[in-house]
Length: 228
Image 1 (cartoon, rainbow, N blue to C red):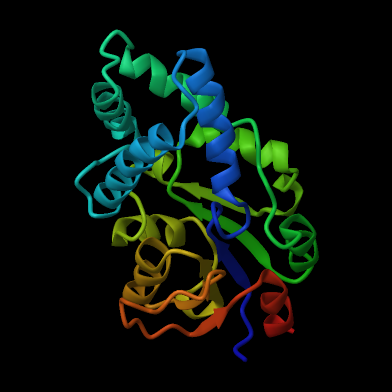
Image 2: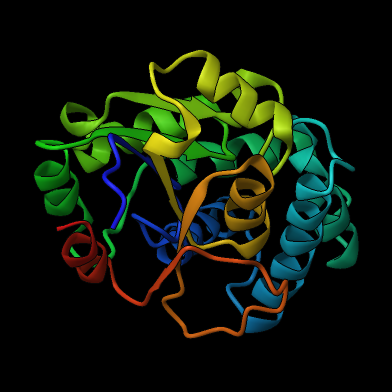
């Protein structure tokens, strides 16, 4: 295996499980706005959320402040035009920043890997949310740097995101391995940029993009063994 000097890690659904974080934040937000905690309402929100993120990855939405569109459409669908969607979005984002649920003992993994590699986070996120969640998770001592789309002004998988990253690290492309769960924002972005990639395919999904992935793993424990 190639000897890498730095590792680029995606954050959500690679190191930390986003679903329970999102669910907890939604429950808190729904209670605050007296919205029924039903599967139907969750499904309505999730559909709007997925539509937003697909648009974000494709560049339809230029920054994450545009995420308010999720709540504009959601409140309209449930007939709650009395709710200020901008305010609801801000409330949800604050709630979102309060938790981080590990995947496969990811904090311990980062601790071990940081002894031999410089570790960088590469994530599409709001900076203040990622700041707080990194603190909550306790991973800052193991991270050399963080590249957050909102702070950069461009998101994965766009070339500009990775240009910015490499302008701020002392490594060449061949010295870096990118680890992520998303075929589009992580793996396709890395492949197009000329990086070696490791697809964290936790749920054994097919490679519908037919990308030339360097490595594929199904648990983070496999990554540790792979790098050895």
